[in-house]
Length: 225
Image 1 (cartoon, rainbow, N blue to C red):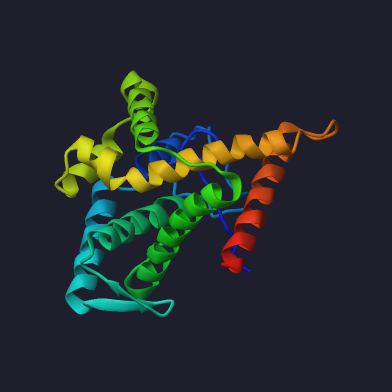
Image 2: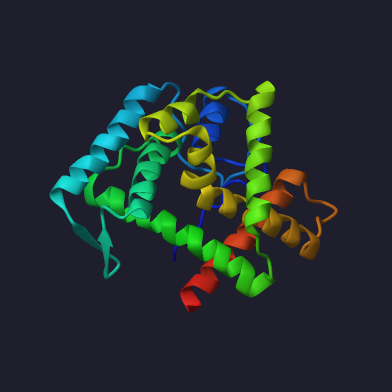
């Protein structure tokens, strides 16, 4: 059975945010327990450079790659987005250096998860987010960074490496992941209303139970499609 991992339920997690959270040892994120620990040190420039090199190598070797019986066009901008994002995310959070077919497989799995979570929230729970809500959500995250509560270098360096302005990086490159995090936040509070905290249940136990319920329902939805 597929194991779903839901990030961003408490204090949104994105690459540029996750890097600063993990390496400053601040704990303002809820995630599935027992996941691999992030690296204690990481050269940001080398990490981004390697992600781009891996993508260019894939593009030089393959026009398309078959993933789950579907042909994936490597030059597709959306595919490029997920491949580069996945390489960096896996290195920072899962402490894995993915490359080649394995990298593409994982990238397409993340893309599938992103689309499925948003579809499931809408179809099963009537939860959706508008473009205006996502724009406001991105601005809120940006305000949080600019207030000095979270450092900027990681996402700034990614945007520069991708030849994107900061606005393009936040409002276009990361758009789908911001949408997913916003949907997950709405789902989290929806589930908390549906399943109240029990008297003998700590907050940590309660939030873990809510996430497990969400993952179970999401898995059942995906398998039934």
